[in-house]
Image (cartoon, rainbow, N blue to C red):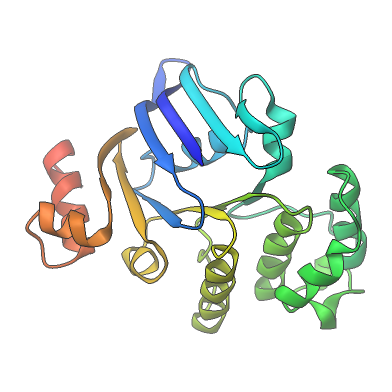
Length: 243
């Protein structure tokens, strides 16, 4: 379980997230929805201890370490969170094999995990290929595999469908659902179809503020809308005046 308590993040005079309080539960896929600049990536990076609250706390109840505060024990947080970044960067001259071994060593993980990651994300045919030769689809599979290979408890996905073709999106969704069987999964997206296909719970953000959260069904009912997309636009327009 991950809890944000009155989480606020400022970048100079700009407030990217303001007083966000929310719990992400284990074995659920929770979506963070919002337009560009809503604060989605800010929250994801805070959950992964890539940066820290200006005010408030990010608390994680870990099976491995017990209860930890991300600002006080960031290395522990990074060891139990797998971050699948949008537009991920790789060491292009490494092979897939070399890069996964490097990630295992960085997190003091067993290299035996590599076999499971390669099988789960179907990387067998490119295992000994240089990363710079990989297609977009294989690069995204590697993005997931390197987050999985050190066996984190939490997976954090930033726009996981970005740039993928329809077949690749189907494969990605299957992988995410498989991960959610034994992990906490958090994903950000601006695609309502993605949220409908994957998420049991969603949080809707705009301008760094939580507009609502709950199941898709409860949010649709709350806003008296026909579907999630219309509920989303109704909430965002009401809060900002225009979208």
